[in-house]
Length: 134
Image (cartoon, rainbow, N blue to C red; front, side, top):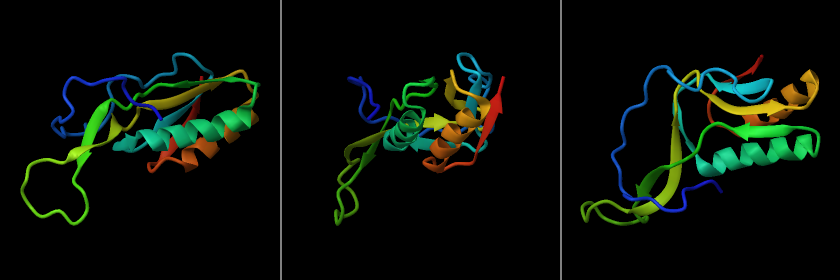
């Protein structure tokens, strides 16, 4: 799964998701892209599942770029642990995705193939997305 090699601080503030993305909103690498319509945190395993299903569909035909990287650590306490005792241990990594942010880009395929691959990847994500083209 996608995660940083190491982090300086394993426990960080939650922060707030912005309404709309100000950067990463235009296609930079590929001809087709998957754009987020909602703001949310995406886990590294959700991104990996989407990447895997798209790669399997594409096989050797095209190239896929992942435009986001989960580098925000999240903590969780064990089940059945009482209140107090501080924050839990590192659980997983997330990426804050704002509405309008491009998550994946794809190139080297026909329009129908690219749309099908991105549609299959979108099923793996917990947010509404839109397929865009250059």
